[in-house]
Length: 272
Image (cartoon, rainbow, N blue to C red; front, side, top):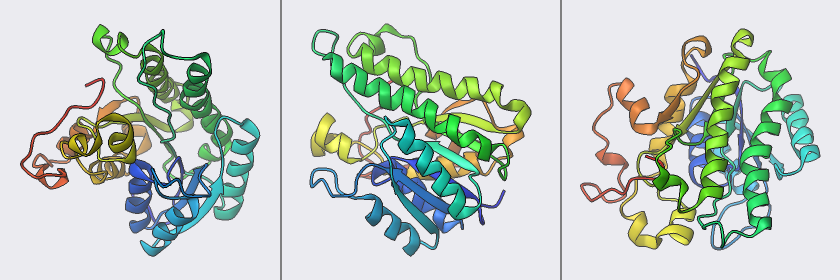
């Protein structure tokens, strides 16, 4: 399925995986909506909705940058209406925006618990809720959520239960939507990296440059998202993929070129 003139809304796409997906799809002719918070640059993270939009347009796509904090329903609704008015509809929603909090129960303040759930769970739910009228009319409509396979091994729950359940909730939404919207012809899948990905979060919050050097580039997630979203919605839905699984289905098994340090040691991501 071609991406020419398909309209893709991506939350939190000012940097990292979200921006990489935006650039990949823009090169294939998609219209991109960058729906995210950053309008001034945080030097630790880099990027704003405007710099991301400029890169998308330089890659050959049309782009609309919309400031939206998905904790606030009115901002979501306004952004989606503006996106649909600009491009005539919405065909794909990518739930990329997410907050991370790798702390135990005693160390997790209530405001942090509320933050990760208001973004990861409530925000993801409301983005799809308000995009749904447009998706129902969309061209090969897909929902793609960046969340992991649901792995109930206690080792993933014990260290940071609040964060883990928020991400598993995102995956449950993805699975539930596949069933709920099946009659509407809307696909819903989740995707997660098998290894850590070299992003600002990895470098600044998780493991510094040492972990970044054991990671893959954002290109692997962009390519995997591309292969999912090009599938017919009726034939690819209800999955919680890893990037490696998606690429393997396409016959791509040599992944060395995605490594930050080709041939180096790779570090598995959370939940896999």
